[in-house]
Image (cartoon, rainbow, N blue to C red; front, side, top):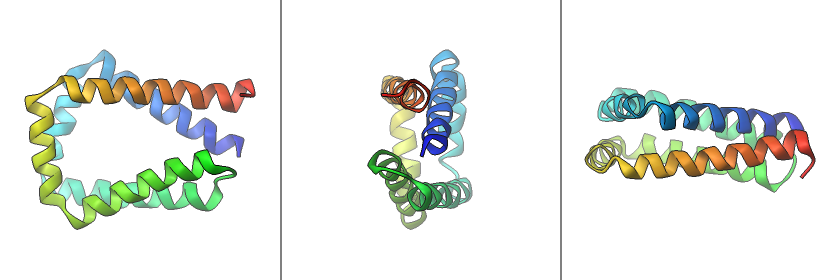
Length: 119
């Protein structure tokens, strides 16, 4: 479905673009991820987005992205304390979130090209 591909492309490009242009925003989000209540709320949001993407995804790519969001949401629900430890590790090594953001930015551009350019 073109709409879901465009949604994920805009979401990934926008969020990872902000993280790349303003790394202090990423540090602030990582600080919030140390709070278990924030982790649980964000996990439910991720589970809902992943489930909707799987339910309404047209081909394997949208369903794959939805599956990743669903699995990460379930992981955060099951182990919120581990997510806090991972956030502390990412804060100690700031190049890791920047590399993940760059890869997410490229995936978002690919999804936008696929949605509007016909790849």
